[in-house]
Length: 290
Image 1 (cartoon, rainbow, N blue to C red):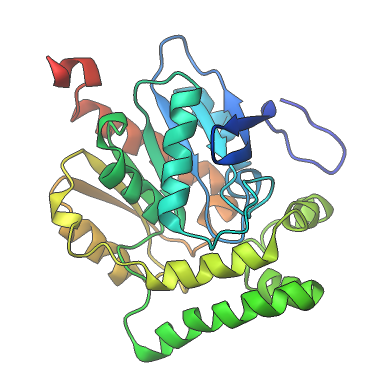
Image 2 (cartoon, helix red, strand yellow; image 1 turned 90 degrees about the horizontal axis):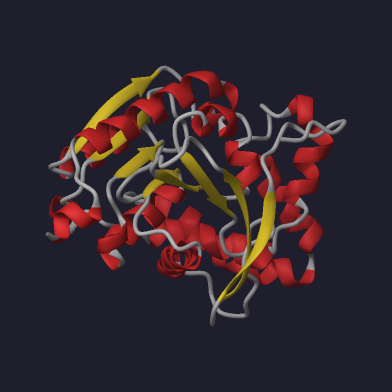
């Protein structure tokens, strides 16, 4: 890992071409020999690095780590197509194939939660289990919430004409905005990499997402780190997700939505424990197939 001035220690990164889809950027930590792989899926308005920089090292002591930038975020895939969470899940599955991995444990934070859930639904054979953090099975229940998310569609169009205004608006709402002061210039440089049209469309996609009808079908071990003082995704909505997945276990942390940055040491412990719980309750793909 490097430790450049003003930049947190980060593992090696590289671009990966996903056939027929585009080019994305990933970070990798080799982990212990033969260790299972955690696929880290970041939240809305973040990048892989902004979301996970505080936990790369600790997670890498226990598992092989792969973290990717999602479409329109950071150095993720660029496309003229509308942003869809399902496409992000397919991107992640394609990456797993390109890396020659048989299976992974997706770790989804916030928006990364729906992407992890969709990976299970669309690519079940490669998902050994799920670790979810600060997320929900649906995000907008009330009319006010739906209007808030749907309004992002219009802002997406606005971003094509006035990207600086859109950037200022959404950066102010980024869950990392108050917790990355030490790395301020670096954090800003990460946010400046976004395709704002796609990021804003992602907000609409989150608001439209609902997995509540099929959550009871999830048949892989699942762990969920619930952020109890979360003003973005209330704890009751996170716990509703846990209650709907028969295989889910919850651990609670007294923190807000930015826990992955503000309390990275504790979050790393919970993620490691959650992943170990998944492994104890699951079997490798080869065993499942026999």
